[in-house]
Length: 214
Image (cartoon, rainbow, N blue to C red; front, side):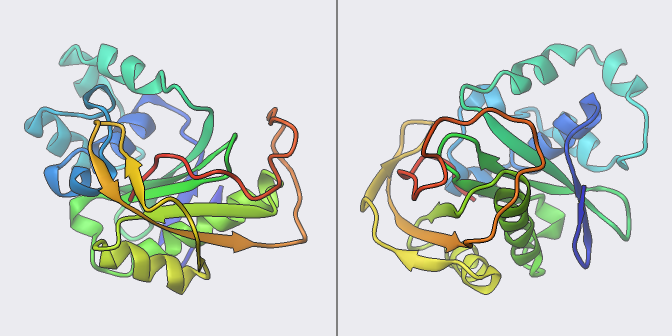
């Protein structure tokens, strides 16, 4: 569990945590940049809004009554190993988004729910990802990618302390779209590893870019 000025970030514990963070990235504006596969989204707008209206301490009786447990199971079956932190806004207790670190590459990702964008919260998300990668997962280098035209994401990365680095100029998103790409990294020599998670040898070196967008 990590805290920033306005966010509480924690490893998802219950189904609502999984669905809340997924709903936060499932609207068209978010997917313009993220490009997730459809299986990883809460596609029904009413269902998405229902999750985003809930507080993190609400129960899931309504969700189970709607018979959408299979959606949660589908969202949990990702292909790449990663640690994700669900982000809850501390003032109102609702799901604000999530951030993650890929356990193979050290690449971070992050997204915000529609009601929490353009408020500077992206900086807090990326700083939490830095802390997760360096202090809990033992990475000396964490990386991030963004499209050159995604100004809010790039500004948030830079404000969080990421530096621009060379990388492949084009990248294919999970939904098959090929986009322009620019790359950032954050390096820290002093690291620690508090999570008992298996990583491949050499994962603390500068990783190859992977697909994960904000």
